[in-house]
Length: 218
Ligand SMILES: [Zn+2]
Image 1 (cartoon, helix red, strand yellow):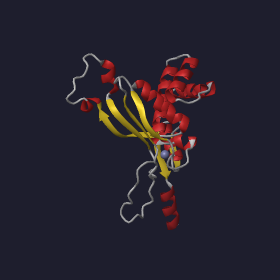
Image 2 (cartoon, protein in one colour; image 1 turned 90 degrees about the horizontal axis):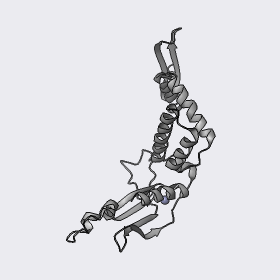
Image 3 (spheres, rainbow, N blue to C red; image 1 turned 180 degrees about the horizontal axis):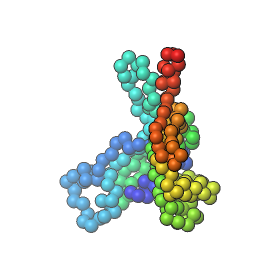
Image 4 (cartoon, rainbow, N blue to C red; image 1 turned 180 degrees about the vertical axis):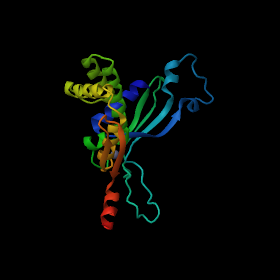
């Protein structure tokens, strides 16, 4: 199962395709009335007797309400799928059939921005930072990130993470993180009030909507 999972992860990266499980049958239900070969750990480990992955852009999105709200969904009714089933020896999942075509553009850049990929990347990086803080060998960290993220990782990337690890352990406080978040993710203008010893006194921030409504008063 792990092997299949790893292959799928690689496939996803190679083809810039994010997949999700659409349909599955647990081995147990497929074996109803049959006796499971005792001690057959491998078969049990497979967990599924049938598994269908679809593209995240599969399915359709029903317009909600009057359709006034602009939908941000990825669903485009994409026909792509891979179906796996238990092979004859019941020792592995094999590809039963596959529909390789998508009805949309596949874009490596877009793929990296799918929430799941971003989350994966964040977890991998956070792990790497912990290792670097613990003074782990940079080359080792590099190959670990490469394997886990399935991406090309340069020593430069590792050095950047090491820099992050360093500023982290230098007691960089959460305040800067909050300021960065407000600025970068929410496009706010932020003013932080600190005294001479860098003690936090207060913070003023405005997002775009606030700025606009403020302007309409003045
Ligand atoms: Zn697709």
